[in-house]
Structures are given as C-alpha cells and as structure tokens.
Amino acid sequence: MKKKYPDALLPISRYKEDYDIILNTVFSGEGGTITFHPDGNSDAYMCEGDRYFNIVGMKVVLPDNGAVTAAEAAAEILWCSAPFGRYGEIDWALFEEHEADKYALQAKRLDIKIALPYCRDKKIRRELKQQMMSTAEDLCLSAKADDWFVFGEGKLWGKRQNRSKRKRKYRMKKRRDELFRQSELHKELDLLEAKIGSVSELLKQLVLSSSSIETIYYESKTYGKSGRIDYIADLLLNPLYNSKKYLNPAKQQECICVLYATPEHPCTTAEQNRIIEILGKYFGSTPWQLFTRQCKGLDNEVELDITDITQ
Image (cartoon, rainbow, N blue to C red; front, side):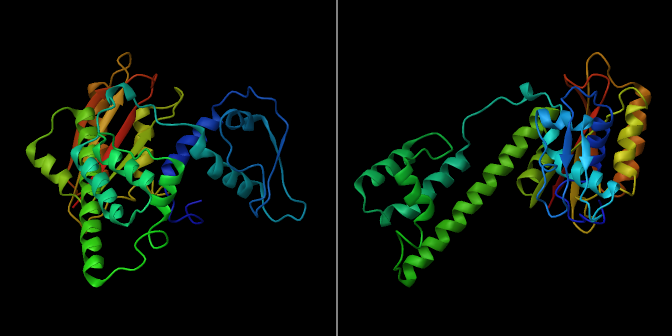
C-alpha cells in the first residue's frame, strides 16, 4: 500500500491499527459475500457502521478475469474501509465548546463587508447586516441569501470593477485570510492547553507564529497480546510506515507529545522511560516535549498524540 499510495492523507501506521482491529473483531454480522472490482465499481468500498464489523465474516468475490489477486483485494478493501471504521479514543469532555474568537468574528464581518456594496436585494442586505451584528462564528443565511453570497462573486455582484475597487477588494481579502489563519492558530493553542494545561509564553508564540500545525494520533491495538508501548514503537519506528510524514528537518519545528492511559491502567515508570527512549530515536535532532495524561475509553491500551509545530 505504501508503494501504491505514496501521498496518503494518513500515515500508513494508521491503517496498521485498523488492520489489527479487523483481525481482532469478533464476527457478529450476517455474513454473506462482498464483491470486488479494481475499477472501483464495487460494494467493497466505503465500509462503515455495521458493515465495517460485518465485513469480518464476509466472503470476498473476485473478478473472473484474474485482474487482482486475493492479497491486492484485501489491501484495497482495508484501505477503503479503515478510515470509516473508528475514531480515536480521545476524551472529548476535555474540550468544551466555546464562543467564537475575535479573529473569526472579524473575518466573518470583513467577508460580508466585501460583498455588501454589491447587494441590491433589500432582504439579502438586511440579512447580511444582521449577520454582521451576530456573535456566532458561522453565517446563518436563507437559501437565497446564501446562494448570492457564496456563488455570487463574479456573477451576481462585482462584475465591473475599476482598478481602485479591485485593489480594495484584494487588500480586504488578504486581511480576511490572515484573520482566519489567526483564528485557526488560536484554536490550536486552546486545544493544546486543554491537553497539557497552561503553556509557556515561548510555546504560545511558537504556535501563533507557525506556518502549519499537524496533530497525528497513534493508538495501541494489542488486545493483550503484546506490550502497548512496544506497539507504539512499531508504529513510529518501523520503516514500512510513513510515520515521519510531517517531520521536516529542513525547517524549524517543535513537537508536543501527549501520552494517554486510563486511570485504571496508568503508565508505569518503566513504560514512561521506554516511550522517552522511543521518541528520542523518532525525533532525532527535532526538539520535543512529552506529557502524560489520563483518558477514559482506552481500556488497557495507550494513545500517543503528536502535535508538529512548523515555523
């Protein structure tokens, strides 16, 4: 799969986790058959919900012309079903919903301000002005107003613009995009604080001045058959997986690692020392920090969240 999907959206290690889930899933479905065609016209794709668990007990029917082998079909089915089968066991109680931040509100209002001069419909103008006064981050428009606002640029409004108007619109759009960027960075900072507690001023400035922030989740799926920290080590260090996808030694980076375990099965001192050793090998010269936290829903497993902050 690594050869066929070199630019996978997720590290291949994520599919290793899903593969182990499938291997250890107790068949509880209705069985039956599932067809596979390499051209994509197949009910073996996008297996989610009940079908995700039922697939364990299904017989795969391959095309008669021998276009694919059983191994290739298995890889394709796994590739297509894995992203839909589960979500990380993160304790969402940590992250309470909060009001829209000032950057998102400013960006929304500026977006409306760009379009407002071109609106000739009184009802739509009234809706847009109401939204400028709203403290909600998202726009809430009628279907007609939404159609005009979203699809109207270059068609329903702003067709003829002189040079000064084009420059004004360009500057406002650049400002809007920067506000949206600042909003996303502040959300990332809030998420980081929810995970590890208060952050240092240095780390705060690092986040707010970053060019990109990526968070990757690694979760052990041992089912009691092997060591949970050794499982994480395999996900990070096995050269078969592209787990270092977001590491870039050519750029200035800092990585924040959070290791979760349940209160019933906390990480031992030996496990913490082992994960420190693993992360040292994984990051090399890239600066990193490790925090240990407790989270419900992991049973005997552990979850490692790595946030890559790139300047």
